[in-house]
Image (tube, rainbow, N blue to C red; front, side):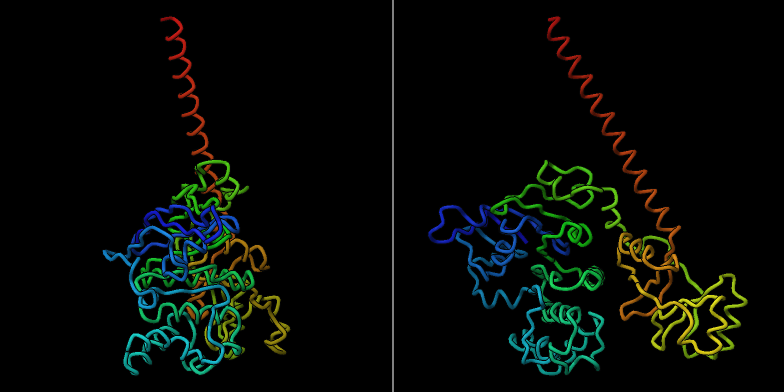
Length: 398
């Protein structure tokens, strides 16, 4: 997808809201537009699907110039997800997801199958959520349905305008992980607007840091922006702790996820006790009937457990998915007394654990890499200074 000299000038205002934006978004990548409030990032996004008509410039998707296409037809070819989901309250979950497929003439059976496929894809059980209304869903569930609706007609391009901005931080982390997982499966071309630089680092393949009127201050990979911000404006977005922000660039799936002794809550008590007594660990992880992490049970809890498992053990407070970042995992471990965090699948089922030692080893590697890079940069600066001094001296002698 290409934006060519894209400009928006509102009547009565001599200064463009968006001024001459040129950007190429490669097929299958996530590009994040990040910048201060009022810089024009949402206006730029909405010009792509012509919710806001450009004053001038061109928009190309694939080999097609869509600038002069019927805007209604264009929007049916582009997925669109916004903050607070934008679901129609009088329609069920299934009706919301089926909206665009019906508009473009899909058959009833194809649409019905697609609705079930989309619900499963975003981790919602079709049997449970098919007939619910938006008011019967949590904020996170509404956002998942919003993403499912945006993807329902299988558009090549997905636009997302601060889609996770209206939910709590924990739900937001999980929704970000869900988007990353979906992108691994679907390989869509995604343009995503946010004001949160940490979110940009976590999700984006490339980040466009925008000044006023959507002027591009830097357009590069998260790694490049973190290690080599182009100027003070970009440095201000990166903020302090760039090395720790790089924890958002490594996923849990990239480090050592290991198995851990488990038992199901509905296993016979005696078998749970035997496993706990005989294991090499002094604790095990109790799973609920759906194999979701439920409680950490330690040997010291055995006396209480003999009376009732409900009274024994420590409830699992946090879990992470394989697509969570090391930063997410580290925060979860630090707030959980177990010193480790459970890793879960699409529907919350147990996969394994990541412990503090593994995370700290990775943090040390990142910090060491940053240290070596800083030393190399200092060495290059000294060499440049030495060459400059030599040239100046030669010039004086001449």
